Structures are given as C-alpha cells and as structure tokens.
Image (cartoon, each protein chain N blue to C red):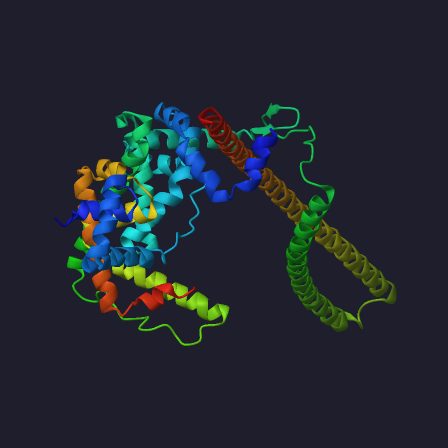
Length: 275
Length: 219
C-alpha cells in the first residue's frame, strides 16, 4: 500500500519537523512516486526563491518613549495642558519682569542683574570665535548706524548753515545800506560781535552733535551686550541638552551591554550544565 | 572569563542580538511592571524584526514604519495582558499582525476613495532569464535588487492569510506553535496555509519565468 502524505506532513518534511519514522516513510515514497518528489522540489524552490529577499536595515527611534508620550498626550484631556502652559507662561513673564536667572557652577538663584561671574563652559577658542563672529556682525550694523548718524548731522548742519547764511545776508544788506551813515568803529564792533556769535553757535552745534553721537554709540553698545548675553544663554542651553542626550545614550548602551553579557553567561552556563 | 571572551570573538553581531532576544525574560517582566528603560531595551531588540515583518507584509517602507510604531504603542498599552513572558514572541507578532490588518484596511479605504491613479503597476517579468555574462559587481547588485523586488511583488500576490504565515515562518523563524498562537489558529491550519502559500508562489514564479536556473545562479 503506497504512502500518501498530507499537506501538513509535506510541510513538516520540508521544514525538518517531521518525526523520524514518518520521514523515512516519506523518503521511500518519494523514490517510488516522481510526482511527490516533484511536489517537494517545488516547495523547496519556492523557499529558495524567498531567500532572495533580505532583511531591511532600519533605525529604531532614539527616544521611543518620548514619541509614545507625545502620542498618548494627544488622547488625554486638553485642559490640564492649557493649565500647565498658562502657569509656565505666567512664571516666564514674572521671571522676565524680575530678571530672574539661575547660574550653574556654584548654584545661584538671583533677581536683577547678577554681579557674580558665571564660569565658562566653553573653551576659550570657541568663546573667542563666537565673540569675533558677533563683533563682525555687529560692526557691520554699527558702521551703518554711524553712517546714518553722520548723514543726519550733515543735513542738520547744512540746514543751520543755510539759515545762518540767510540771516547774514540780510544783515549784510542792512549794513551795506547803512554803511555810508555808520562810523568805522561801529562797523568793526558789529563785525566782531557777529564773529563771536558765529563762533558760539558753531561751538554749541559741535557740542550737541558730540552728545548725539555718544548717545548713538551708547545705544548700540547696550544692544550688543544684550545680543551677546542672549547668545551665551542659548549656547549654554544647547550644551546642556547635548549633555543630557549623551547621558541618556550612555545609559542605554550600558544596559544593552549588560543584557548581552548576561545572555552570553546564561548560554554558557546552560551549555556547561547540559554537558 | 576567558570562555566568555572566546564566545564574543566567535559570535557575530546578529548572533548576539538573537541570544539577547531569546533571553529577555527579565526585561519583559521589568517592562510589564512599568520600567521604561526595560521597555526601551525591548523596543531596541525587536524593532528591526517587527519592521521587517511589516515591510514584507506591505512591501512599503512608510506603511511598515507606521505599523511598527503602532505595534509598539499597543504593546506598551496592553503589556499587562501578557500572561507569561514565554509567550511574548507570539503575543508581539499577534499585535503586529493586528496592526498590519488595520493598516491594510486603511489602505483599502484609501484606494476606494481615490478611484483613479492606482499604485498597482502590475507585475512585469523583470527577470525573464539570467543574462549570459553577469560578471561585474554592479550587474550582480542589480540582479540581486531585481530579485528582491520580484519576491516582494510575488509575496503581495498571495492572500493575506498565506502571506503572513509565509513571512512568519520563512523570515521570522517562528515555530508552528508560535505562528498558531500569534494568528489564533491551529498548528495544522498554519501548516496548511503555508503549503498553499508556497504552492501559489511557485505558480507565480512560473508565470514570471523565474526558473531553477535563475535560482541556482550565484548572486
């Protein structure tokens, strides 16, 4: 009587999970039945064909829990989020209004401008580079603003000069009309007075213009200080974030190594116990 | 210690990963009790496997990524329902299989909505015959890539039931018991589906002129 295997037995045979007795029986049946042999070959060919598709490499998300939390938060009630956001905003506003700040090195909480020096966390070269870059950027703005200020001063000066010239012209005409009637000493005294007035006026003008320039430079320097201070704070935050990230990765790495080592030890122990 | 070192020298990366996956009971117990680090470690260990299961199921990176993400979110949510760490593998693949089904239904709905411009380009017999002289590395790479694409297309021609059993057995190396648990079917049904899947695959191969010569060719 010939042996007719079921589909399940054929699969077990192909995958090597058939019992020893059944396997021998099936191998004998294959010798007598070419169709059965061809069927098994076809199954093996399909498997061989499937072997051409290899695993795809994929990068697992670095912070799966973070993403998970993000997704879960979407499903939660919206109000607590608003409440927290409002509280944070309020705190930030108060902190901004009172110039509240925190220093790390030796821990310090302060309101207003802190006089204590914050220890540098960047290398001196990096700081120098950042300062140079900021100065270069700022210089461009500074030059443009000084140029604008000069233009303003020049136009003011020209307007003043034109007005003055107009007045002087009037005076000259009046003087010319009365010239014949005026004695020489009076003319000389008038000219001296005129000269003195002009000198005072020019002096006042330059004093005012110097004050204006000083005010401009002072404003620009204040802006520059604020800019550098803001930059420094942002850089410190970025460095802190990088350190946190590094620490997180290190902890993961350590845990992974521990797990693999534990697995190897378990495998070795199991092997030695089996022997 | 020397023995451990020797083992490390003899083992390749994937072997170590495989061992770590097979010995993750303590991680599973910790993760089940809410340890986030342990859960992250489990994700690291199984992410590639689940992604590849989903990738072979859909043949699309984006959909596979989406299904993988949803799988691990579901795992995190319902970890308390896992009764025994021994059943973790089949339980994980059951969730992945459910998520793939959900994505598949989503894709089907999208196809109905967009009646025009179907993504299905049809199957073209890319490799009618092996070229006479495939010598250069570039040629070999090209042939390998085309073969992989062809396998993906053939897999997509199978019914979902056949396809998932074929993937679980051939690529994920699950035992028949694990497949049966993951799909909530009997072991015999799993074997039967695998048989019909491999047979259907053989027919598709014939239709596409994939011969024994093509398969025997040294890639």
